[in-house]
Image (cartoon, rainbow, N blue to C red; front, side, top):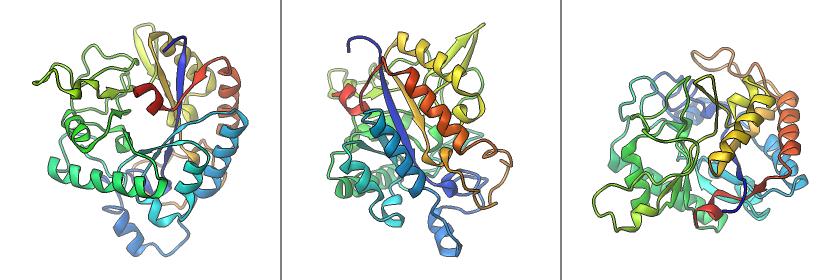
Length: 300
């Protein structure tokens, strides 16, 4: 690619998909299936802010990559179709947004066979509803194990975007040696080096390196808690290393209060709504000079 390039990505998940509510070793509900069997109140806090995100992207003439939790198809009729109809790329964010490795121990929580079965099911579901070939994956909660890459390639994905290299936390089952914020090929160096597996790309998250510390600046919770200027600085720095991704959740800009359900994260949603929406627009205004493409176009 010529010049600085950026992919704006959107994670389509609702408030109950976060690990304190569903899909983790410490969640209130084991998974979203259990959640929907017992929850009898309003659950949809996603549709309205997704419409806002789509309007913002339209205003800035940006085609984005939407990483969709596949069970959204079943509980939000028409939502994924509306995203695809506006020309955005649909990618996979898991079947139920359940953690595949333990957030604390980094040990696998699912067998490789089950992971492949569920991820293939997600891919098919999203392809049928969007009428697109799904080639991209982002691990739920960005918790990624090395073993998952081989499975993703086997299933038919051409790229992943989950790795976060920073000094504050780790979400992998390995130390990503030599990895920065630039795209790289995680399967190179394995057996059968002449295989097309070598073309499977990883798009890491951006970071700002200052005083020997790498601060995550990819968006999402960082946009809510660290603010806009440090995010912009990190994106600018990361783009000098190579193609860079930014992400946001529609629920980040939701102005309504979410149900008081969850364990261990009492302040997680203390900053959201209009203030985050304004930060997002400020960032996009300050990145008008940057060429923006969906991740699929870079990986082709």
